[in-house]
Amino acid sequence: MKKASIILCSALLLGLLAGCGAKNTAEPANNAPATENSANNSANNAPAAEGNFQDGLYFALGKEDPKSGWQYFVKLQVEGGKIADVEWNGTNATVPVDKVTYSEQGKYGMKEKGNAQAEWHEQAAKAIAFLIEKQDTKAVTLDAEGNTDAISGVSIHVNDLFDLVDQALAAGPIEPGPYKDGSYHAEGDKFAEGSGWKETADVIISAGNIVRVNFSGVNEAGEDKKLNSIDGKYGMVEKGGAQAEWHEQAAIAEQYLLEKQDPAAVSFNDEGKTDAISGVSISLKSYYDLAAKALEQAK
Image (spheres, one colour):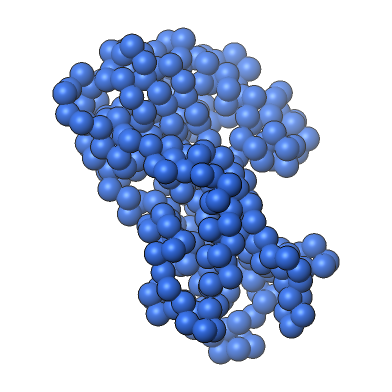
């Protein structure tokens, strides 16, 4: 996964424009989530959460960690001027579901692999409860690694949570996108006779918007197509003279869908290819069709 994050590292969704807002203003809510870049200046000067904010939905997306590959986001609801609900979660270019789900499924494995006292999602829930109780992002002191001793039972890095909450609140409330939040999956009907791959598409939604797209595939041996390409086993450049490896082209296609937020925004020729996405020569129509199928579940 570390190898994947180095190759695929990209700050997804940074193309979505984040409108700036301030607490207790009469300005209308914007409809785009705050990103780390868009909210940086505001967040640095913003006061800590004081329990006196404009009611509404807030969202912020951080940068992808080049080491772990995880990209965190927060969604929070302010009611009666106070933070009423918070979702802290993450996505990864090689993980088909969000981090909370991945942890709940036992696949992140902090207890088994790292001898942690609790799984990631359990510790994240305690950090969120602390924030809602204190109503103040500055109520906790963090060390250089983003950890704190102030929250009992929490040993994970919590700096992303508090930083992203600051960014979201500084940017102002947003209007939710058209989709239902969650992780959605679609796959082909069968393994292709020529390649042996069954194509897959996974889409993760938060605040009604697509925050991660993962195009891949699986063969009868249970291998993952994207990881297979990352490990050099697919060999499109060496074997086929392609301009880039399959996973690199897939990443560009995923990013394009993140920017457009709609699989129908691109047209394809009879070979399933498109000139609309620069740097991509692989057939994409089947993947965009699968993304559309996955998003049908989110309507």
